[in-house]
Image 1 (cartoon, rainbow, N blue to C red):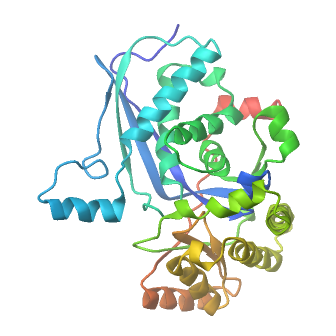
Image 2: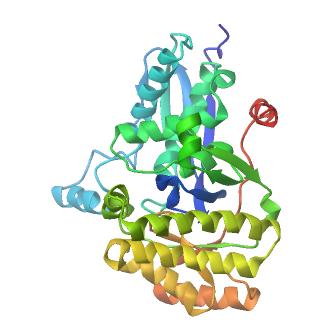
Length: 358
């Protein structure tokens, strides 16, 4: 079978994700709208080699320290894990998937390395970015891109993270595979029938200017889903009805964007956050995360979490003067703020042709 030559270096980037509307309903058979942003990204490089080697990152996989105090400080701020475990997990998931589907793989080895500038614990999908970039390297290295459907690739990324106990939904992985702005339908009937959702790319020109607000030292977003998930599984009426409303916000948001009804879009952003707050509670969301939203609200900007916490997406419907006031308030509060740079679809021509035929 065809494969890359021994001296070809393969490199792919996967860009940070902003959950625009509907999150976290993707975990609850809902609907979401998300977009890729060029502000931050993860890069994975694959180099053919004699043995298979996963190269630790000199910063994110640090195992050499000057002292015990430095090591403990590092663990307290950044946790125990870097990206090596993510690369190992996608190696396993990819191999097992191809074996299950009878997709033959050549036996050449490679060295994997990665880098990322996606802020840690920022709710911008840093982990899945690394996994997505690695998966794209495998698709090219083994020349199997045409054998693994576009809509199935997010499932592989999610499965790799699941190997590590990372609790998440499909929306992050979908938009990192597809790129651009994507509306997603994860309704139970569709998921049960297809094993994945329905993913509809949208025109990036529909978006108004959006801004990212994030904390330098964000809280851990992994705690946010715990109690709500169990309450939803138990059939809690408030949680079930609220998740349905969150999902409907994405549906309404799709129409609002297509009609460029930005006042409606702003109201939906705000309502999305209010529902999340009601369901999860302030203690779970965290003081810093709530403060980022409140800083935006203080100047009249619409705002909501980009993911489960650590960063906020804001929209200033009043324009330049409001943006300046928001910048000032973010500076006072010690938050970073920057204009979002939407990143267009990253699907290649083969993938796009396949999608057009559906």
